Image (cartoon, rainbow, N blue to C red; front, top):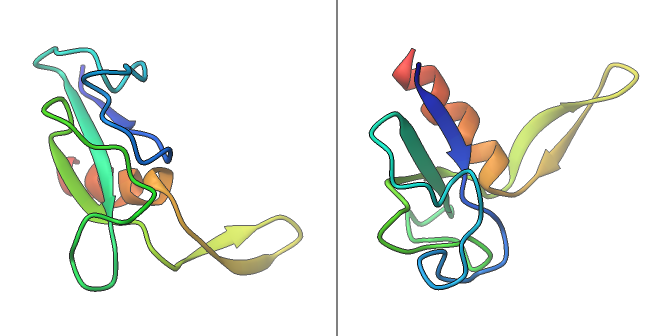
Length: 87
């Protein structure tokens, strides 16, 4: 089973300060950071050797409650892109 995990939004190295489950160094976990609109690591994204990939997580249009949409940022937004590609 494959797990696609958000690396977190604290701007820290998760090799030094682990964030689980993204910090587990296992073959079936893809740890995802966030990139910005210039394809650089977003200022808020966690990073480190355990982060496998980054995808857009900056100003992503997402669904909200009550049939609304809004702009969100974070590695959770990035994880959705990577999950789709992995599928």
